[in-house]
Length: 157
Image (tube, rainbow, N blue to C red; front, side):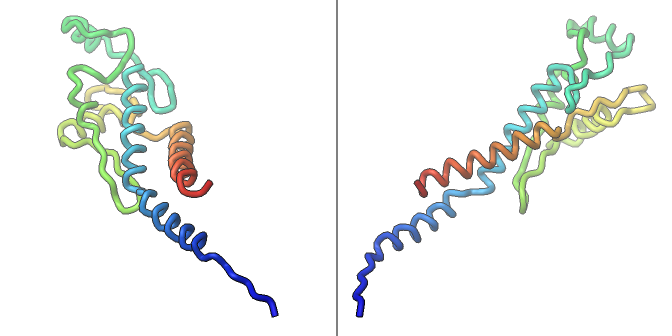
């Protein structure tokens, strides 16, 4: 007969580590970080004058460019920024399986819709800015993988 003594402390530690890992792996926190970063990407490229695919926005109409110039606003590139209300109204919230990006003000949401899809009655061209690009999706996946890996390395070395 073989006597085998097993020290169960290592198994107990693994069980505790797994429980702690699950508690540390806070999906809503991670998705909140993703949302904040995605809003920053959208704002940054919009202020650079490019859409979600990095294509420059169509130029301002001559009449609107003249209006902007009178107000001391730049006209060399379309940045969808005049007072900052629309971009400032971009917001996020956690939902069951992720996050939702939205505009927290109905007037600014309507303005954003007109810019994003275009508004024919005023000859406003579509300038799609409020999107997740293929590159954004890659960065989001990498961000989540890095966050999980960082937590994993804390508990399982």
